[in-house]
Length: 313
Image (cartoon, rainbow, N blue to C red; front, side):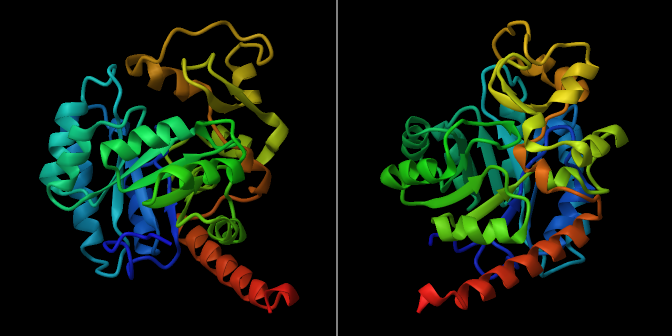
């Protein structure tokens, strides 16, 4: 296992609440961190770098009341269409954000900037080739986004993806894709991941900044209702079928989409709702702290039950 020293002893559960585009904000981050998991949010969930800095101020001030809280993290989109990257990265360095999650591009200069103050960089990948490039950029960890994950996702089975990552990378490995319970987190660890990465499950919390209809659709949807397509935003991602229909589109005959453009991404995702195949395990909406406590209890029970396995002797 390769959990970074800066995280060791600060987590009650080996898990990260993924940065949810348009849905994660200070309330969700603070509740997750004070519960002992890494809470994160995308910098672009604020409309300006000034607003992003204001959120960092708020999160820092609120977490100061919980000295045992887990570290928080921020997601930066490293893509040529993200015109805010330089300014947001400068803000990350100024605030010494503990964990930075990079997506859609692994760049040495970004990694070096975060390393300059001792921060960690975890990078989203969906293939061996992406893992190799991120490793060359010097990232501390890789988030293997396997088939069935919410948001931008890959199409590899998690077993295959973990094997491919481990063949080329020796740092921290985080697994993403349909993880919804503490038992799922335990399974990810058994598969060889250091940390688990949960996104869709945290959408079904009271702190998530989403429409009530979005929450209800999460409760009503099953794995078969998730549509994997590049024709919504220009990059392969998973969306709920009913939200595509509600937007006046035919999920089975979607028009072609131009390449990814972050300037229009928010508009698309606000009306067409993303989720992973893990929706099939969601049957209730609760506070983030309550969810974290449930995950911790489920994880511990899973580990205990595994120790009783007759084949473990």
